[in-house]
Amino acid sequence: MPTARVLGGGPAGLMAAEVLAGAGVDVTVHERMPSPGRKFLLAGHGGLNLTHSEDRDHFVTRYGESAERIAPMLERFGPDVLRAWAADLGEPTFVGSSGRVFPQALRATPLFRAWLARLSDLGVDIERRTSWSGWAGDVGSADRTLLITNETGHTREVTSDVTVFALGGASWPHLGADGTWVGPFTARGIDVTPLEAANVGVRVEWSDLFADRFAGTPLKNVSVTVSGGDPQRGELMLTATGVEGGLVYARGAAIRNSLKAHGRCAVRVDLRPEVSLEDVAKRLGKRRAKDSATNWLRRSIGLDPASIGLLRETSGGTLPHDAATVAALIKAVPVVVTGTMPIDRAISTAGGIAWTEVDERLMLRRMPGTFVAGEMLDWEAPTGGYLLQASFSMGVVAAHGALAWLEEQHS
Image 1: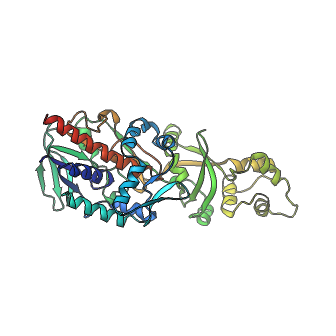
Image 2: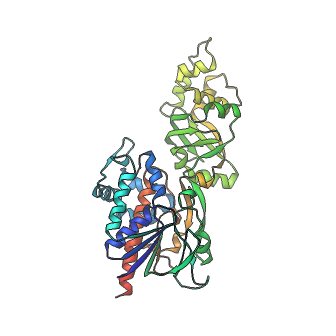
């Protein structure tokens, strides 16, 4: 019986393990934490957004520069197949009002327990509290012998016919993925783009008064434009140190690029995207003489206290008096981003093993028989089900690639 070692017990690794074991491979998963799937289970606290229901053409664009590489993987294991897989585990899914797909239980635990039971039935052995600490051979060696270290610090050498790496990025390191794999991979000459925070809040230098009053307050039904790109509509969350939320996450790459080029990034927030500039100015022009600035903005255009506070904050504390100037400000509030929050507070990471290092089967060109899946590769996507979907899809592709390679070796 052929053997496989899977490094990492997240969605990509466990999916690879399921496919391999289902094909008759003896699979051992190494998970450094006391239990697998910790980040997956944490995602379930918010309802477990497994995937998205939007059409394929739009879905693929969510992967930006990596769309061309990920598209074939979605063809092999796409949203419909993922939903069928969940239903087969006893957890049917539904489409929410936003188009996001959730299990009916709205929790990760029932699905994950059923998944672990299936893996156990398939004979998958999950060695907990064991982590990969490199390869046994010298840096220039082609030796694929793995070094596995347990919780006491004892290291042993293990071999297998194929290896699948699914060690994640470097976000939420206390859940298992800390990016320490980068060193051994680069030492082997494998090109790894530096890991960066993705789907993470950004820093804005608020005044103490604004931060104290509005931290934790959402700005609902606004739109955001970054670096001249297309506006995107949704919700922002004000924090004591800046802004976070889906609108920021979706523009993460553009924000990072601007920060690298200029040291800051101008984000324009439209507080009333459903109303034209002309209509905003017209409504503001009906100000009553006795209205304070706050009442004026509340009565005429329906701004809430946080939106009014943001206008004041970005205007030096004093709002202009004329309707046209205030209307222009409402339609494009300038929020200056000075940085992102640390990578250990990010939902996911950008960067990773360059696509040029793997073939279409996700096998490392420099190390035949070794496959990579999930966040270890250089791609990113916004929240909304796109991260999990791609991780599952990559696990399937890597496993089928490993099976094909095994067959080639014995033909």
